[in-house]
Image (cartoon, rainbow, N blue to C red; front, top):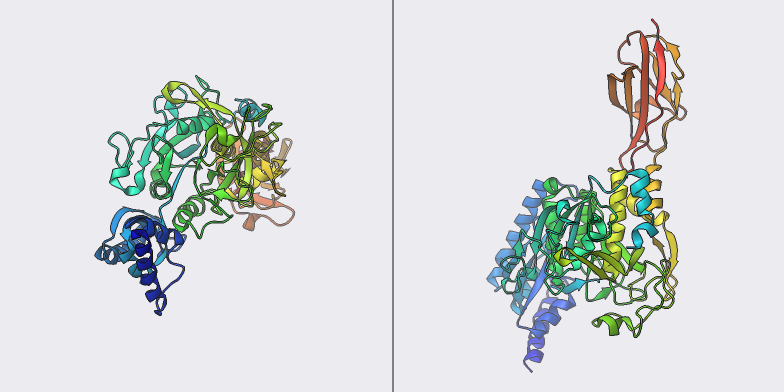
Length: 555
């Protein structure tokens, strides 16, 4: 009876406002009404209309977001709202409200969307060689060195022998900002600087990316560095507002963190149709800021509900690279008996797979139009709590597999944009059928993806001077233009390797459709000289160097 009366009150408030001119019917999500019908107060994520341009400098964005937040805070706190967490760069915040706050929120033109904070959790050694990563390590010497991955999960075993030397930064966001629900170590706070793992899931996920092979199987990028962000409690549960806060923290601190790729092996308990940006505008804003402002791709698990056309958040967000799961080898029937639900319970589906194999999509993986790629996710042995190993199955294990491959690609091409990286993963993958629907997905292939980015930009072909040709003191260096290049890097030295000149050159000045020509800035001394040139593209990085060309200067 109390709940019914509460719902009547909420609907009455909204009806009064809808009759007014200023009402905005799309401001309040249905989840907010439901939450307030079930309880007098509810924790909500309030997204504001973005007060800053997408490319605004960080200081300007930070100031504009803070000013917009403060303006809304004043009216909200006057109606009994409590501010739990404010974001730094994402235009929004987390608050606890009652129904009396709804009219002010609906009437405020700065408010874009109000949604109930939503719970979520984890989306729970053959894959490295099966996808060719061991060949990338041995043949190309690429191991993720110089690449930094942020892992948003249950944390990490900070002294694990496979992971301790990779850990460069930690943070923690839990409890949705509600103090009583905080789980950050060591004092169960809602924010903290320790990401110590009390569940084990995050340690396994982190190991898939960067385990060194001391105890656990070697990861895809064993020399990559890790920023561990704990956003799940010891039960593997968390809140979407915490995940948004973590993404916001990454952007706000990117100038010191230097993150290159983000992995989120977690998901909402609710599955969504593709492109759920409108349902989760704050999280979408946080992901977009990472991708569009900082050139950082975010990988996320699609979820394990077995939905053929739906995915969990954040995988359903359009700019996230959503990863589904295949098996990592032929395992026979999986599970051995019963279904995935009888094995794991919860929202796992009542299905099983027989046969299994690396080209077989797991029946538990969420699918549909939001899925970008798939990767092995069952079963994956990796690092575990207490310095040991653990074995998991789920799209949670597929996402870091793809993120680990991305780390190898980024070591090979540090300037690789998220768009080109994603397109390359898709173009080089093997097609995997989804028997539940008409969809086909590309399975990531480490070797093919790395080899593709290594040859994305062709090497310029030198024309002259070559083969110890004789020139005057101001030779003109010529080579064939490379389509799409933004610049050329030219290097000139004496015969003994002593540098004479290295310079960036503008193709719009030096090149036509047939040839690029560069005349030395100053006369060269008599004797033998060497020169090289490489092309450079802002999205693809640099081409391989041209061969060394030798020529002789005779005045």
